[in-house]
Image 1 (tube, rainbow, N blue to C red):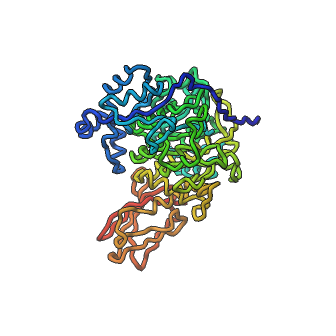
Image 2 (image 1 turned 135 degrees about the vertical axis):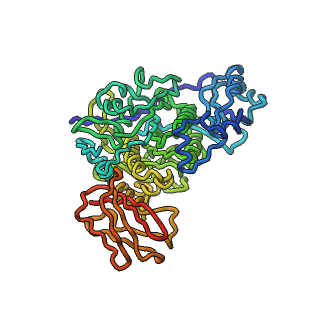
Image 3 (image 1 turned 120 degrees about the horizontal axis):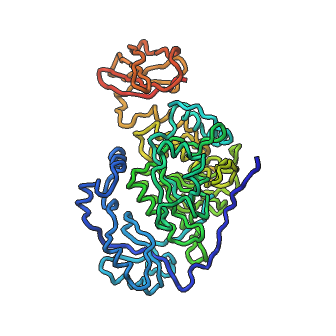
Amino acid sequence: MKSIYLVLLVCFVPFFSGAQEDAWVFLTDKENVAASIANPSTILTQKSIDRKNKHGVLIDSRDVPVNENYITQIKSATGISVLAKSKWFNAVHVRGNQADIEALGNLSFVSNIDFANDNLNSDKSFKSKTINKLEGALTNFNYGNAANQIEMFNGNELHMLNYTASGITIAVLDSGFPNVNTIAAFQRMRDDGHLLGAYDFVNRDSDVYTGITSSHGTLVLSDMAGYIENQFVGTAPDASYYLFITEDAASETPVEESYWVEAAERADSLGVDIINTSLGYSDFDGTKYDYEQSDMNGNTTFITRGANIAFEKGLLLVTSAGNSGSWGVTAPADSPNVLSIGAVDASGDYVDFSSVGTMYQSVQKPDVVAQGGLSYVITENNNIARANGTSFSAPILAGGIACLWQALPNKTNAEIMQLVKESASQYSAPDNFLGHGIPDLQLALNTGLITNPGQRADFDVKLFPNPVNDLLYVSLNSEDDTATVRFYNILGKKINSFLVSTEHNEIDMSSFSSGIYLARIDTENISKTIKIIKQ
């Protein structure tokens, strides 16, 4: 098959003529904060509320929308255009000349103003800039061309266990999704009702499919949701998706960071679990907004600060590390709360475009890697092609992580991230090229099933090995002499039960079929349920 390479070009457009500037205008307060928090269904969907409650995420004033009356007054100010808003920061992104923007400071509800051009800020404690654009029932799937890129991290093993990301919602933040609503590669997703919604934050409409100059989002989505029978299967074929355009492919301006934060806020309010971002910001049209390497420190750029709040809100963020090679990772991949994904080739070797970690990150970057060298994708014309970029290593792994979270639904975003890193090939000796290495999601699942956070160690009961071939051993705690172990299939039907003791602690599972079972353990002091994988 002919190889097609995605070439990522930055178009340098002299956008900021006429002394136009971008700035964030931060506001003093919000309306009805206490009432909104007391009645969260007025500001969040029930799915979002349930996810936050499940993982102990606080609903606070940041979830309350920006005061629309304040926005109206800013819009009516001389020479001012309001381009985006952020409830998390209680701010709006404006464009105008310097004097008109500074005049907004006279409004009683404006707390402070931060120009994207840091040279215009008297307070140097905050700066913001942007983009190194477009970083770049048990189903027996035939992965076809896509086999290597999922088998590399054992994502196919999770599929075999019926973890295909069902029940997990992913928001894809990108530059355009032409023909996702029509081509056959996404017919399975559409027919199953898994395309939940879409919005273009750049043009402020819901059409992300037509009249779009960039097909980057279509390629990215295909690595998770694409399906062509016997030829291609994405890594999260049964996840649900929201598609958001936050990147203006025609230019590079600071407002794109604000579009991203606004979309992340929308995703949070809709109850999204995972955000995939194959975008990275460090360089703009012109030079006055450009970031330095030292700005990639996890807390400087507007988009990274937004990502940090998204993490606090319980979202898991999977982001391309960037295609900047030795320059280093780009925002928001610099955040310690983002799982940044570098790229390797089909053999698992580092590819030289993949952004490396530098001395400026507070944690190891990239976090992990997946195939981004000559990855297989599906184009807007329904053709299988190949492309280079961390743009593709990120969604390939994001889909696998969605399957992992389906298997471990009680884990928090931080716990899932840690399991992924701990499973990786060089976790004990990470470097700035591959980070912790290539994950093993089967190992991550096994580790997650064994651990039981919150269980008192002195009253614990352990079953091992897991996965098991024939003999399963039961380790009782010192307070119990016997235990009853009951096995159920994943549909809840009881299969068998065993009485074990400190002297006879073996369970023969050789007659069990391969698959997943729930083992219910009851002793005098504790009761617990563990998932057991029978090989």
